[in-house]
Image 1 (spheres, rainbow, N blue to C red):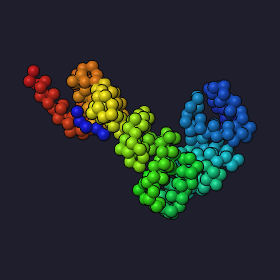
Image 2 (cartoon, helix red, strand yellow):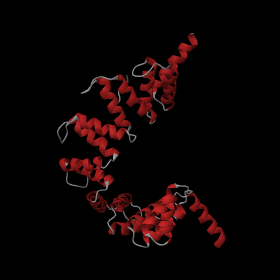
Image 3 (cartoon, helix red, strand yellow):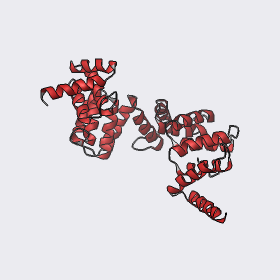
Image 4 (tube, rainbow, N blue to C red):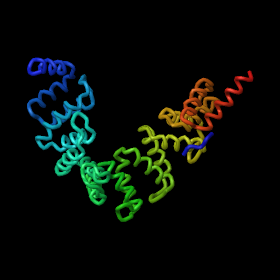
Length: 307
């Protein structure tokens, strides 16, 4: 195995049509939004932004609803509206306008807006680049519980990037991000637990974190779990489990895992022997340029020609 580690009437008709498609709960929210309830206006904006509950995706409409909520000083509306301006979705693209809206949201305590301001200062989006201000906003966002900011600040403490190096504090903050469900933090914390770096070694906890991250689409975590079961490290060697996690990584599009699961299908290790499936995954892996898979297909072709 390869190792892995109108206007009037027309407008009215449109509204009525949309109203008819909403579920009962959303109809009530629409009525409240039309009467000026900011939270309901925020919700309607989300419906248009996501294109859910019978509403056709329309970022312009989303912006209109979020602007109504922002006019009432609703923090999250500022934050979401800024996101539209940052990428020009339903509104004219304006990094400066986005920055200004995030500033307003941050003043009202929105943690995600603080994180976004950090990104603005890091990448000079709508403002001059300023790493000190970037990390200041990320620290504030981290303290307010933003899990992505916690990850960034945690890593910064561990590496001493624009912050005085403090690995222990970094791991503590990183752990908060992992507990909140942020996949990269779960991956990192699993590694620390597995190796016993900066905390007491706990490989069972490491596997739990890798499993949580794997379920969110982490190829690395799938590979690590597969490798543990393949080697029988702290668990009984289990080719069925190896194949299970390898197959999941292969489904996420990882070429190496596609090659490995193809081998499993070819040999019937951890899965029922299935030559058609083996060939399928060899081809998927090879199409991504994985050398071993390309060589394997070449040999299989030569064997077919000899028969």
